[in-house]
Amino acid sequence: MSTVLVPLAFLMGLVTYPWRAVPLLAPGINRLPARLHEYLRLVGPAVLAALAAVDTMVVLDAARHPSFHIGPEWIAVGLCALVVALKRGLLLGLVLAAVLIAVLRALGLAALP
Image (cartoon, rainbow, N blue to C red; front, side):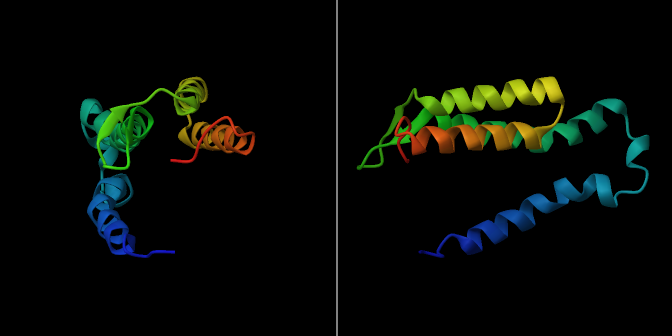
């Protein structure tokens, strides 16, 4: 197991923490204009959606050339988006998407990246 990316993950956590902590630490966050409050609330899910879209659509070959990919991951992302839209909660959608991919991989219907 390689730990070469652990410092990068720690650095990214430090960089993104202020945006996630603003609602917790900023006094009077509820007095912000509704538009700005909505923006701050949606920054996290928007970043997560962008990461999911890239991981879902692009695959690197052995020479690290990107190519467009259509596979079972699209179903998992669609399921997650549907559950989030219906239940208004991100956690349940993410868990269901991860379980779906795990089941598909166990059945041999989805390959490991």
